[in-house]
Length: 339
Image (cartoon, rainbow, N blue to C red):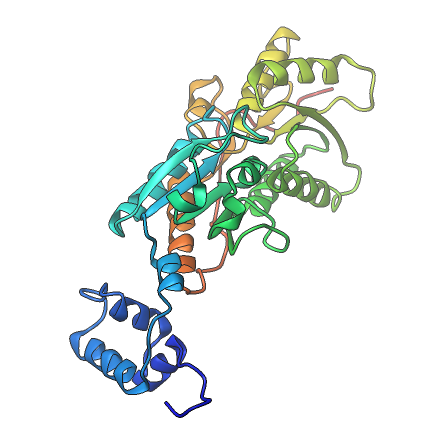
C-alpha cells in the first residue's frame, strides 16, 4: 500500500472478492469448509493478498473465541423452562464447536459471586436472561460479547436481544377471555422487576381497556406456588370492587397457586372463575382441570440466543424478529357463570 494510506479492512477484502464480511471471516479463519465454496475461498485469499490485508488478531480472537466457552446466566432453576433454554443453546453451540456453562443466579435474581477467577479470560461471550441481569455486573459479563434474553430491545445491555413475543401471548389470552364474555379480571402478576413482566402488565391493561365495562385489578406475588396462594386468597376475600370472573397469571406456577387458593375458598375452576397461565410447563397438564396457557418454545429461545451470540462474535448482525408464541386452550377457561 502507498505511504499514508489506511490499513485495509475485512470489508475491503469482501468488496474486492464480491462476498460478505462473514465469508471473509470464515475463509481467513479457516472455517470455510462446507460453508463456502472452494473457488470463493480462493478468491477471498487472493483479494486479501492483493490488498495486503492482515487480520487484527486481538479482534479475531474476540470474534472467534479463544476458549470457545459461553456462559448462560439464568434465574435459579425452579422450572423446566430455563432447562429448555439451556438445551437449545447447547445444541447450537455444539454444532459450532462451543461449550455452554450454565450459571443460575442465586435466589433467582440479584448479584452473584464470580464463578470464574476472571470471566473475561475464561469466556468468549455471555447469554443472559433479563431476570438475572444484576448478576452480570458481579461476573463482569457486561464487558464481554453479550446477548440478552427477554429484554427491552431499546434499552438493554449487550450487543443484541432475543425475545419471545410475550405481548402477542397476552393479547391472545385477553382475546380468548373477552370472547368468552369475561369483563372482570384479576391479574396475578410476578413480583419481579423485569422487562418481560412489565410487558405482560402493560399489554393486558391495554387490551382490556379497549372493551367497555371491563375492570382489572392487579396483585403481585413472588414466583412461587405458596406465595400465589396467599396473594389470591387475600385478593378474593377483601371487599374490593366487582368479584373477578377470570384470573390472568403471569406464569403457570402462579396459576397453580391460584387453583389451590380457589379450592380453599370453595370456588370451582372454571365454573366459578376461569384461570390462565403463561409458559405451558409440564405442570399445566398435571393440574385439574388442565390449564389454559401460552406455550413458549424454550428450546427455540435458547437456539436463537446462541445463534445471535455467534453472529455477534463473527461480526454479523443477528437475525431479528420475536419468536412466536401460541395460546393453548384447555379446561380452565369457560364463559362466566351466574353471579
